[in-house]
Picture 1 (tube, rainbow, N blue to C red):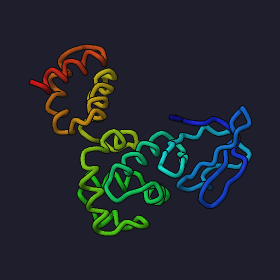
Picture 2: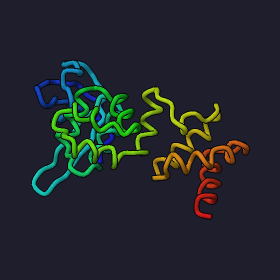
Picture 3: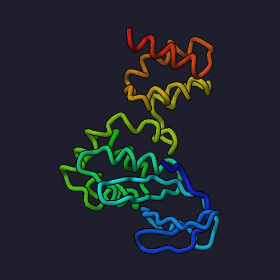
Picture 4: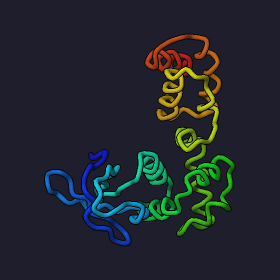
Length: 196
C-alpha cells in the first residue's frame, strides 16, 4: 500500500525507528539497522506494509534496492520478515547476490538464523531472480551487459521482473538489439518471440 514515507525521524531504537510525516502521524518502521538513519533529520524511507491475521507491521529500507531484496527474500520458503531483516542488516547485498548466482550456500550460512537447509533454499528459490539487483549494485550479468540502448535495457529488466529467466532473455537480446524501438515495442516483440 505504501511505497515510501518522507518525514522527520523522531526516534531510533535498536529494532525500529519512528518517522513523522508532514501531517503529524508517526510511523513505527522495523528496519535492518536503525542506526544507519539519523535522528531529527528529514528522510525518504522506503516502506513495505505486511498485513497478517492479528497484526499490521511496516518495514523500512534505506533505498529501493534494499526493499526489493527484502521482498525477494520473503518469497523464500522458511524466511520471514525478521529473518529477512537480519540478512539485510549485514549490508552485504553484493555478497548475497554473488552467493546465489554461484550456488554458494556455505557463504549464506554466515547470516544470522540461516542454517545449511535455509541457505540451500535461498539459492534454490532466488537463482536467476536477482539479476536486476546485480545490475544496480554494480555487478555484471547478461541482462546488464546490453549495449547503451536504454530502451532495450529497460525492456530486458521488465522481462526479468515478469519472471523470464536470464537464459531466456539472453537468447532474445541479439534479435531485439538489431531493431531500434521503444521500451514498449521491445517488450511486445520479446513476448511474441517467447510465446511462439
